[in-house]
Length: 358
Image (tube, rainbow, N blue to C red; front, side, top):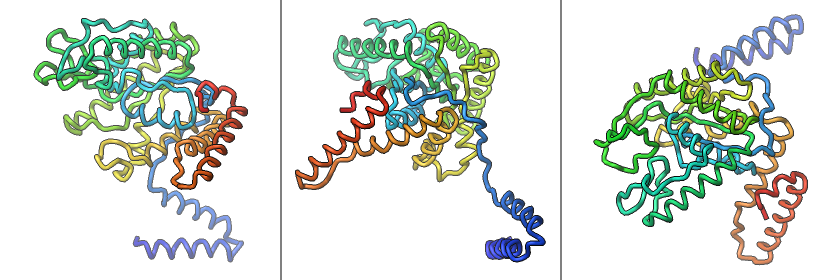
């Protein structure tokens, strides 16, 4: 059926229902049918709002770079969030190891570092922590561990984003590494971790977290970012492995404070189009990230928090705005007005004082 015929048919059906009231009920049925037929996508049904999250909550985000995307949205909403304290973490074994290090407040020792390309590195940390000075590298890493240990102990929510079931193991000792730091590939073995191993690792992690922070709410999600270095077939197998493992974790934990958010399904089955990917065809586009963020809000935030988020996002945009005018008086007036807006916002939401916005 071509577009012109379809348009004329819908127009006639609409006129038919308006002009002849005797057929209004029948026409309404047809209209609903047409509406159903024209729904060219399947949307994620999120169910009732769980009210799990509040704007005053503190969060920790750990996992793939999708955690950075949503973490940036939370920061723009002026929420207290600690995003990837070790840097981006892709596989579930490294995520669990990172969580265990934070729980134990286990510092990095000098013997754990290795020198490569003029800087000191650690396999658990992103290269942004690597420095030419060994002691400075240790201090930077250990300060981050101490700060994130305390944040994890007192926060209300942990969001874990699983990126891939593929891991790199050092051939020398079998250690799973989080970051290869451009060490020659022949020193590593690649392996797809099985569902049972991931399930056991994440279940143990949840149990330790429950002891460490009894009221902590844990949200698992699978990253929609595609890992295509090994081909789409391996990426599909990896994502399926993660998804099955998380489902088994939820069943084994029997914990009402552990949940799954369908970020992967939103991109793959709801949006389902390359226009919702960035130019690399691997990462979600800004539009897709915003759609996921809105769905995340509708799933977990209570109504009052949603209103607070909307207000804070507007103020964040104002704070990031840099007036281009050369008129000093206008710039000073804008800055003064901005400070007044922020003071009024903090007055309404006193917990924002912890962000030191002024």
